[in-house]
Length: 279
Image (tube, rainbow, N blue to C red; front, side, top):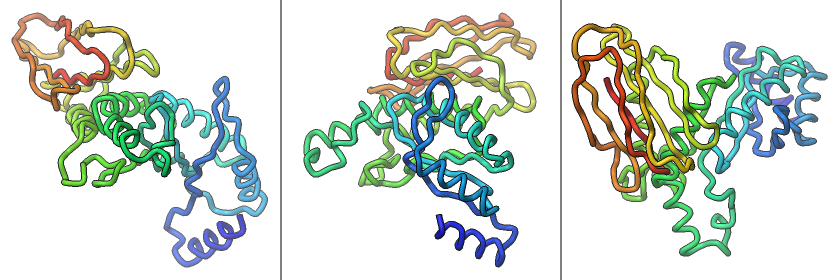
């Protein structure tokens, strides 16, 4: 706490326009009934910052989990906690997150090296990790979070690329989300099942293109029924389906044209799977 006090004041004095915050906390505590049960360290830190009137432009925290909905839940709970301590203007930063297969850290230790670690890393960067990333990013769209930093974008064990620079499945999940962002005006969707499936959609600024992004992390549903209504343009609509799963890396699998003002499709998407549908 004293280190943060000295450092934050010194930085603000010398560079008043810089944002200063922290402490990149891993042990924030669990969320119970929508509220965070903060650790002693966290309550102590916030109390210390409040008592000594320290700058806290952002509060940063880390979480690894096997439930992609946890991030949205925890983001809301942390926002509530910050507000209760009087830090209503403090930004909420999840500045380290990734999929933790089976919520098991053993493969990171000496006893877990070898085949256990290999399977763990392959699952993290494979189709399970890709569906996890997709669902987490979609859930975060409805959470009071200002920054989310995936760990990591390099060639480390947790990275989007293997040691040889070859993209993992999780890289293609990020690419799928970028396809959604190419149509950045958000549309109303329904059908998400927290922790299992997620769906989000957007339309382009000129109203001529739309994208649906869907992820199936652990639902038993074998297919998605897609209904896109009230297409805003006149004339035929060309559609194309891209799939990301154990065998495909966001590959175009189906396409067609419809003259209706709506699109009805049944698309196979057994977990773990990611779908992008472009109209």
